[in-house]
Amino acid sequence: MSISHLLESFEGADQDDGGSISMSELSLEEEKLEAFERGYKAGWDDAAKAQAEDRNHLTSDFANNLQELSFTYHEASGHLARALRPVMTQIVEAVLPEIARKSFGPRIAEQLTGLALAVGKQRVEIVVAPQNIALVRGLLDEDPGFPVQLVEEPSLGAGQAYLRFGDGERQIDHDEVLSRIAKALDAFFDELKHTSEKELKHGG
Image 1 (tube, helix red, strand yellow):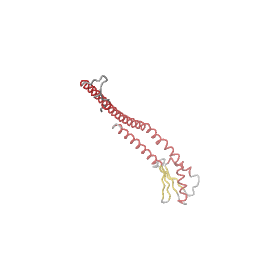
Image 2: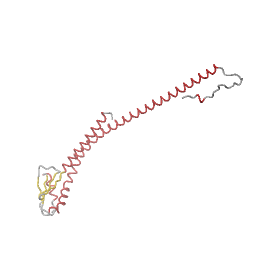
Image 3: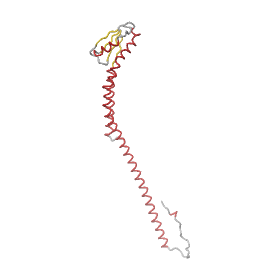
Image 4: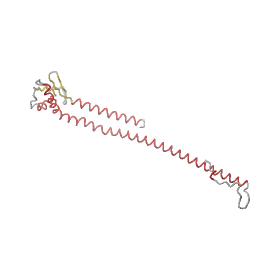
């Protein structure tokens, strides 16, 4: 970028003493002007180059920071999954079965109440595992309004029961519900672990 237009020209101007500017003096001034312009242009180019380098450096730093952030996120996800899995497994294996056990009797009572109008005077068989016989027998202290027979079936689990009447049947299966929850939980944590390891392997 030239700055010659910013400088005042003294060519042809009379000196105070009435003399004229010599050719050597003009050549010297021109050389000074050219040197100044070269220096100015070099400075401008250096500034532009430095600005471009700074911009590239910032872009590179930003990309690196994003990559590190992604790595940290997936690493944290992996740690969180490993920390939570034992806790959630404990809940599924200990807490939920206890809740299911306590709700087993009320669930059967609820089904019997619902059958009152459906079965009329038909006999209803309540089929449960041996360990649940005493529990269910306690539910039959009050007459449900239809004949009930309690049947012991060793092949059933602690959370399973069948209510059979005529050609109909209703099933209670807390064991199956708990099994599905456990499988879903395992699948969730396995997928989370796989995704985290895959992202870390490929650098986020």
